[in-house]
Length: 449
Length: 32
Image (cartoon, rainbow over all chains, first blue to last red; front, side, top):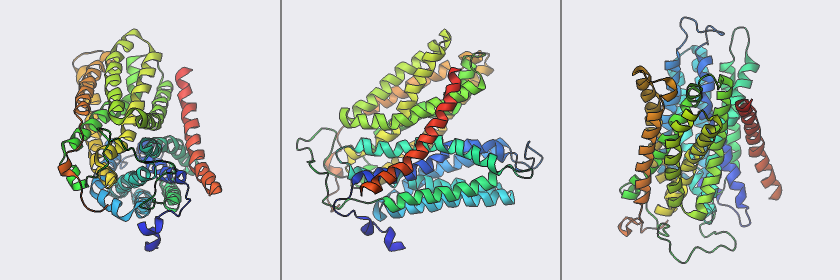
């Protein structure tokens, strides 16, 4: 079994169609994207004893909320820690490991529900599942970049779009399964966890089976590497241990962190935000529709913006994210004041498309700056910016809103300051992106790749 | 090779389209 998983056994035969690799990557990303929909389990997990209501001994929302937080922390840490291992062993072994961790995480969590031991769920979905998320997220990235040297943005955008799409599948699937397994003595969460663990493991295994790496001398038919060097696209390579010592790595870290912070806080608070800003005009059901709509734009933006970046360049793409973001965020309070729901929704649809686009364009940006040699590992280390933004974004939105309300500001206007702070963050991102220059030659990797 | 390509895209395309359809159904409530 081990040999089948080794990199040497995944080298594609001549004539292999490279468009088989994106669906393999998508099979993994569509599965791990489930994490974004974990909140569908939050309420049911607080009613495991009471079934229809929270009974004494049931966990509360705060305790349950930690499951997702732990998973996201372990996503960032494992991507950073195992990046080099992923590069060394290749996509098949790392995708298989991700499938074991992610599927196993669900099964351990189901056992935790059976024993009513929350720590087992923290360990299962949080720690083990989180490692599955991190390893699974980065495992197909460098492979896709190597298969599509002519369109790296499009290729990685397609895979990372899957991470956004995974939530769209998992949310209705979880609800359907819990409904199906519900009995008088169970609210169906345990059975749903077991089912999802098995389904996701098998689905990820399709990706494990289908993924291939190109032969070392392979290049797309009819494609020749550009002969005229471009300022921000290197033909050299930088190793991961050297990459994070360059100013470019940290500039990109801030670029990603600022872009994600601006989007993630809104994403988590979208439903109450639209209801409070348009009080009495937007029902909870309509607000759920708003969340669905921005999730769709989050997913579509990943593919569209990353593909666009192949034509207009990565730095220009991020400049659009930051400048357009500043314009839109600064307009939002006015749109709320005008009572224009349509324009408000349209503004957030574009903002969230750029949030997704930021995630999907970063691997190609890294490839442009550091080459293909260890781009997956470098990407893994850069994802720590996501972990930081995951804390920073919601804190900014939630705490400032609460502070404003406590200070007597009407709920409808409690988001205005936050929007202007987001503009400030986006300006920092813009300046870092603007300062991007080619990596100094002293950092280049001189060995064999 | 072509059959495998079609199969793989169907395997990832159908769940994704289903998810998009379900989300759009939900999103329509915003305009009702």
